[in-house]
Image (cartoon, rainbow, N blue to C red; front, top):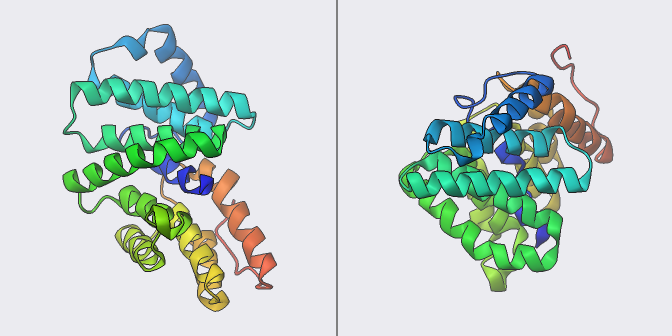
Length: 236
């Protein structure tokens, strides 16, 4: 159940919010915003940018558990301030849910269980505001796949949402990885391999550093596990 709250989808969300391609740039920008007191701002754009930076760095760069947890917790706190300013913003619900879920996953089973209801509420609200939101469909796919049926798990709903996510964005690697894992779990290794190969062949147009650090290596490992050779990918 903990895995449902691990939300790598957040790391690639909001390319209109954070366009830098390199983690060093993001760290410098984060430090600058913190020094300026952006967390206490009433400017929605600054709050969203700050919450997105915490999410990207917590997922894509930081390795130490405590550093990751602190980033996600602060990202959720900042996103909550943004929600207080504008509840009708889809981005605020996404960044709150993604940071909150990622923090809960690190904190363990009890925190994850207590967070599921709140997480669902924000993801469903996100879809109300933006029915074609790639990350929302990915999150729901993860939740339906990971949760036991007594808590709302539904394997068919899971694959439907994962398929919807990749149909909305061919280059969205987190959803492709999870779709491939779903196929693998349900005895369809050939379909799984197709998705993992697409992850290698179709890097995102932005934030390739996260794909290089996280998604490409995961796809390579999974392909080796099922005995499929990699097709030539784009230059790294």
